Length: 192
Image (cartoon, rainbow, N blue to C red; front, side):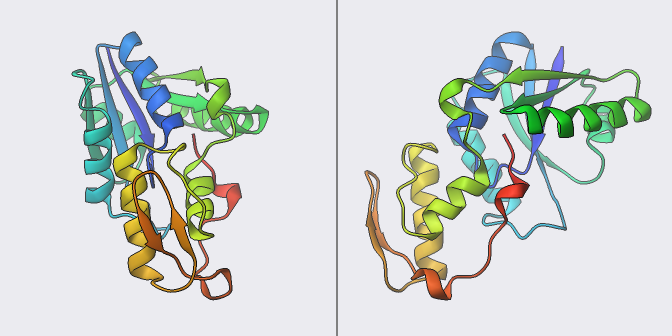
């Protein structure tokens, strides 16, 4: 059975990896599907996110990463998947995800949504939280894989090359001060 784990993964977090690893034990194949969302301004391109995911999941032989446009249900049908895999952190996630699952069911009765409760240690974690911490000069090494933490620090040092110097386990790079930073995705746009 093939499962699609859709999302923006901008960037992939340890919470995402927890869901991917657990899903890989439940399903024959898991496709981590990066949505090209024209309504969001991402930190990383789709190709960069796919590469981050591939590196983070290289130890899982039944996991692949792919990008897609449009409806998740249509993509799942193209890939002959029977399941949409989703992570849940809180009651608020459940309400949104349940509505999405019901909507998807109206589009295809052949595709089921399977929810996995996020592990306790990642119940607060989202890509938005990671970006906000990094943007304000905090270390994200404990929230994302090491290669992703380095990519984040490089990205912020390239886009905002002044002020705050942060030290992490993977890099020491300058970040821009809070007063002159570009707005990012709000915490309301969180994902598992």
